Amino acid sequence: MTAAALQEKSVSARDLAGLCDAADGQVAATMYHLLTGCDPADVAIDSDDSFDRHVFASILAVAATEGEAIAGSAGLAARDLAALMAQWFPAAPRPTAIWCESDGCGDDEEVAMIRDLLLANRSTRGETGRWLAAMIARRAVEPNHLWEDLGLRNRTELSRMLERHFSPLASRNTRNMRWKRFFYRVLCEDDGLVMCTTPVCTQCSDFVLCFGDESGESRLALQRRLFDLAAATPASGSTPPAST
Image 1 (tube, rainbow, N blue to C red):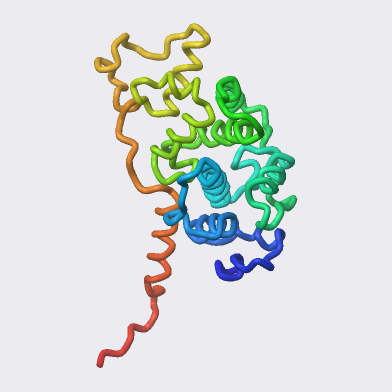
Image 2: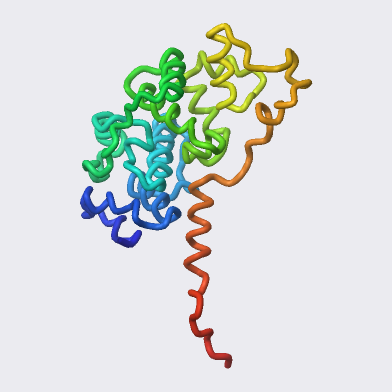
């Protein structure tokens, strides 16, 4: 299925499940556009609602690239994904069983610990914070920077989201530690454990792991760029155009 076909308002939810069969860059861009009506590079996030909508679309878009049920990759139960879609993306097709083959509520201890930490530090009302806690916790076990595995455009967006929805926790990161490392440090400290090998961060051999640079190209931008590059590259063995 082509990106153009997926962007038609008449596309069915079952057709949308075919996103996972396309190239990652096309999948992510098409999913984000289908949810929001725009490209992630162009979206305006000045208001809190527009920002939250962008965050949810980014997470769902990157989850759609991983070849698994979107609910599971995003960290949501099927009922929560349906409720999120109805609240934030009412014009988009409703998720089907193919989106939700895995329930997103497994008993992974690591995910549960991060989710519970976030839930205990919510600073906004309603379901948005609860959904985000589950989604952040699930994406935190992926291997890249957390902002990348949430599909966000940069670390600043991650910080803004945590400061908005999980302010008591975010305010404890006074030294601007990498967020994923910070979560684990807080979990250890709250349990009376010591994660660090040295009492002073600047003397620690793991300093770069905790405080290193987190700049770079977002996963959605990278996937779209690679897709566009592949589309522009002539297929192997094709006949070059005749010279004039």
